[in-house]
Image (cartoon, rainbow, N blue to C red; front, side, top):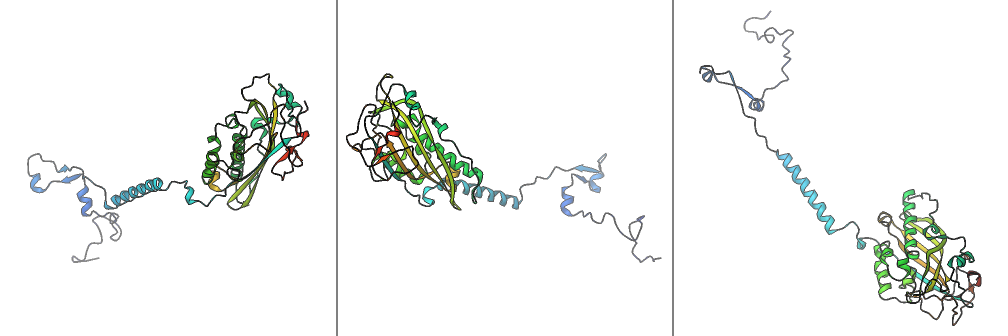
Length: 355
């Protein structure tokens, strides 16, 4: 039992050896200043009916220094992002690797005799090798696709769909076929090929690089017009991975057009014009994301044409009843799967409708 000089064991009435259950609560100066209620001093409480406590106005707390620094950092980061987006757009052709220019070949196919024709376009199709072809975009079906080692199913489908869109716009759109619209085709090209495309139409030349007919199908509007807007088509699309960053799509299609002389009425004889196109597309990951393509090879056989006519800017077809002034080497059938090697060939009789 302790003496008078000994310290107490603990708070009065508290059991057990001095452990204060409120010891963890520290009433420091900041806590006291923040209290909403404040006890009056003894002198203040001497006034009559003075309450023991008074209510203090709430403290006004501003942003701490850390909060201000954080807000400033966020504002600087946001401003930098906007600046970089304006100065360096996400799609920058100069920042990408150089794109291979399109290599093109256009081979006129010369008829062996008079071009057969009739006013009934349905009859022409039914009695030609295009009898079973489908109309329009239905003749350019998408194949079943599978992922590759470095590209997903959706990326392969995107490449095939973009190639199909290019084919449909460049070979089936009546506005393109009649020598007018080209923007619908241009927007599907990789930006690295736009200068070549524009130069091909501004200054066309037969150099294997700058012929409009290498990019798309279009007829001389002063010579021919569509007798039937439902172009017949048939062909295949195939996708393959060439490396970890590149997909390629090969397209091989035959298109058959019913044509009449420009300005002729429906009673005028029409004839068929056949175009076989083999196109090679290349896609990097930016192309897939932007739904664009690099067209790197365009191989075209078209007839009936005359070798004496320039087919660089427009196709100038020989129409019903017309003959070519000169022929070419061995006969070429654009419906066959083999590729011609001559720069001017003869259109095989089997490729013409039986009229």
